[in-house]
Amino acid sequence: MKGASDRLATLVAFAALLAACNNSGGGSPPPSLTVLTTSPPTGATDVEPSTPIELVLAANSAPLRAADLVVTDGDNRLPGAVARIGTTDRWSWTPAGELPRGATIRVKTASQGEIASFSVREIRLGAQLELPGEQVENTLSWDNGRRAVRTQSGRVFELTGGTPALVERFVTMPAGARAYGNGRFLGEQVDAGVRYCVRGGLDGGFDRVPTPLGVPLGDLNANGDVVAFVPGDLGSPAEQGLWRLRRDQVAFELVGPRSLAGVVDRPSIEADGTVSIAWAENGAPRLARFVPGNLAGQDYTLVLDASLSLLAAGLHYDASDDGRGVLAFVVGAPPVPGGLPERWVARAARFDPAVGLGVLATELETYLPFGLSSPGTNHYFRVENVVAGDHGSAAVVTARGYSSTQSGSWQASVDYHAIRVDAGDRVAVPHLLVGLTPIAVPPLPYKFNELRASPGRAEVWASQRTSSPSGFALSRSRPGGVVFDTVPTLYSDRAYPDWSFAFDDSGRGILAAEEYMWQGPLLGPLLGTRIFPID
Image 1 (spheres, rainbow, N blue to C red):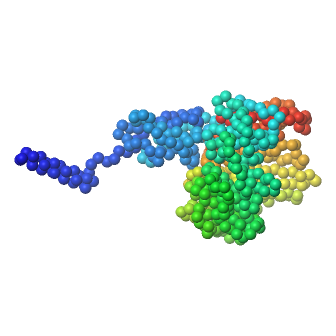
Image 2: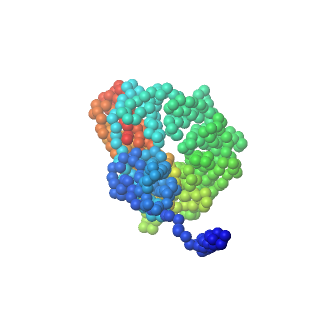
């Protein structure tokens, strides 16, 4: 029995020693995350957008979790999935869609900082396709690679992958529909004087819901929720304000009571259904925000310097999925030292749910409207659009131009600039996105530019007809500036007066252009629509 008691005493002593070590903070520290190598390696170029990122961890490293890895394009954090490769020390990060084309990708962890950076190949124009006898009305692109064209006759064609082909989908898609989800779309339709919100998909399914008091639709979030705004001069006070239609609902509901008139902002909706709208009141920008379940809402007023005069035209706000948003507007500023005339200045303010609304210290852009004035010439400068990305970065598009009636003829010119505001509120230098040289009226039967934006990365694309009747130019705003591409000139004896294009967050897209015979200054017979896949 003595041996047994000795063994028991030894075990008790060992347990006490262990407890003492634990209580004194001893023992082995938890393993840290250590990445040894990555693929693609740092400095790699022309990486395919579908490429996953592979990481080799040290033998004693902690497991890799999605929260540990940050993959970014500029200030855009890219979504992706982390998985272990078998039972090895190799892990993979696969992008939710694809890596954005033409972007510099940076990979970092909290413990090591940046561990790799590489660049993704640029966009490529695929083989052209034709739709004989059809006129393009709208194009759509989804993050999973699906793309479609709607013609003015109401027919819908999907551009299939692999060897590109056009497959007709016999679905009801309204003109100007917007893409969300997997092949889903949402748009508006007026029938017998009633405006409807129409929801459908390339794979079938269709419903329509009357909009409140027949107002147009506002912002659409990635889930398929949409918001609409009833202004203060329409309906009764009990009907005025922001209305929301959730993807699983069959009717709009009033979620933001507010009686407002003279609003130019398009109402915004976040991922959780929070809705907001901005307007000008008593010379100050205002913002109203309604989180789900709070009909009272939150009101914010941006106090400006007394020397600034707010120009209400073009005041816009947009919020990202995390609730952070950017409000952009134009003010008239007094002359600066040196005798320059009055300035028009585009400014921005950041909204943060935890802080509120505050103006950014850096101006977005300055315009001297009266420095070039002459009799019969009118200048304008406005915020055209604001797009907030998923993680706080945003793009602001401004428009500056003039109209003139000198010498008895009317002329106009306009330039669109893109200014990026990063998640840390750094303001980038304005970049020319698309410009229109002076034109006379009546012009040739061409439209001259089109703007689109990606919701996740807040990347703005513009398309413009080149000086050649058969050419197009694409320009894309990036964290480092604007990138320009030219669609190759087609047939010199043909004209392409109308077109539409769309793209997803990875830069995959589609451009569709009407094609006519060219007969001097006039359009000849319609040939159809020419399709340009962008891969």
